[in-house]
Length: 245
Image 1 (cartoon, rainbow, N blue to C red):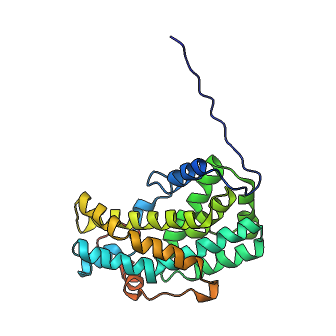
Image 2: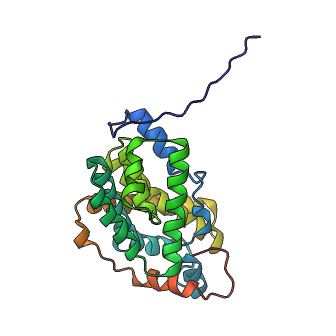
Image 3: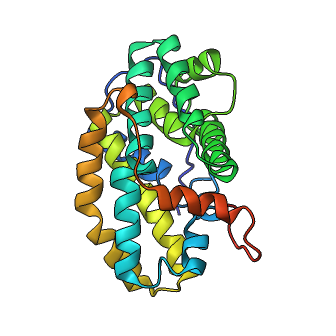
């Protein structure tokens, strides 16, 4: 029987050239997968407290909560940071990237939300640099040696690999929604089918939020999901916790 030996090599992208559609899709599916080692399963974004407080009790209340978070809270803010990080890396502008990175950290409303974004951002950068190296990623370390917010890391990596901004934002927001739904499925609890119903219901919100984020300047970023921000603060002193946020 013939034996086939697979030789695995790391492909290094020397500049942010547009990726072919199959390659871009392959990389996004890998990076936004729950299997990518960023530890997303450890964070509920305040949902754990919201469940205990009675704000989230079923499928409908979960969709309402996440719809607000995505469209008017951290979702659109993070998508905007992701977009601007993408543009800065694509243009090779270290100063602009540093501004985005700093603002993304400053926008975190609580200690746990800062941990959530920096732990995932640093893990994403480490995994991507090791397994999917690309020369433009060096701009991130040179411009911002501090902890990196997750949306900034995703924006930088997708730009470094030539993945277009709109596709990157939609994939990022889909991953955010899916991760938070997964947390809610365990916490409410909800069935797996209801989890998929929630994800399907949020499709137009994700699409609209991604489009809106692309049109925002950094000075336009704000948020109205105050209950979600409060939940992240209250979670810090919650007596029984499964999640880190």
